[in-house]
Image 1: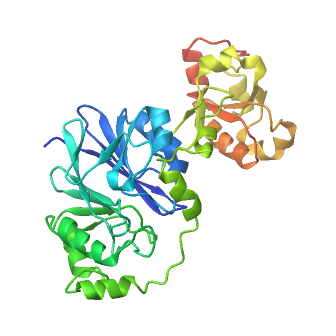
Image 2: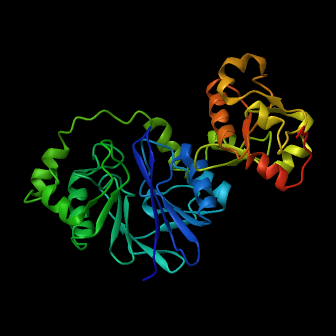
Image 3: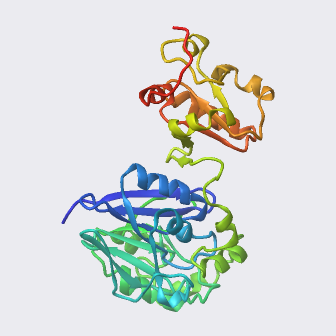
Amino acid sequence: MTALIFRQLHDLASGTYSYLLGDPATREAVLIDPVFEQARRDSALLRELDLKLDWTIDTHVHADHVTGAWMLKMLDGSRIALSAAAQAEGTDRPLQHGDRLEFGSRWLQARATPGHTDGCMSFVLDDNSMVFTGDALLIRGAGRTDFQQGNAHTLYHSIHEQIFTLPDDCLIYPAHDYRGLTCSSVAEEKAFNPRIGAERSEHDFVGYMENLGLPHPKQIEIAVPANVKCGHTKLADQAQAPDWAPLRYTYAGINEVDPQWVADHVWELQIVDVRDSNEFTGVLGHIPSATLIPLAHLKEKLETLDKEAPTVTVCRSGARSAQAVTMLEKAEFTHVANLAGGMINWNHHGLPVVSEA
């Protein structure tokens, strides 16, 4: 069996885990349970890891966040897979129980695990080393069954027949956790899950689930209508990459722009050089029209800058200027990006500089 690229990603607002799996030989990948607000982050990670996203997979129609499936389809050309039972619009592959979803030489097997919703599926890695359980089985918990076609009897059988029959050392990765727990195993959940583990009967489980008394998810009225369209909403149409420049969003959360584009538009931009004064006039020089504001003084000089103007921050390598982007965004600058690679990269491209060195 070939090696696996694996990343567990987190959305703090919804407590959602997304999972990136890739074949290191072919660079093909799948992403399980993407979150709309994190689509640009996920796309950046794919680019930085040199992976091609073949599929996004949602374990079910989520009620607490909007899926990033459609956004990633627009950004990266990926296809969307989801249980056929979910009856969602825009699915490229409606999955049936037992289907295989391949990425390179690796694959996931879809297992129907209804009970939380009718369309819930768990996905088992080809070597039975991992299972992605969505909201069917959580770490020391189980998905609630009081809305969206939920049925505690059905969920009990789904977990016992489709998840607890996996090898004891199979690792369990759920779609959500609100306590910071990241991973479990079949053996652990069979032994210690207070809702369904140990000797708990179906009657015990149903009694527990029917008395959870949880409030409905805050985003349910937004999330469910959006997710039955695989995340294709008016908000998604409006959330494409900013159009003021060909920006590249990094996994570190910073918008970058390439030197050549800046050189071609230099007189249309507010360029803020955050190096020290001796660097500004040193061997690397500075960009024509750049304004020098050392990073240590940027906060106190914000009022000298135009918040609405397209702004590019610059330093020697792109590190200090990345921090400047964060500072400007916190100050509500609306169009700001970092010069990728800083003045080192600018000079590498042979672009014009002003230098007194």
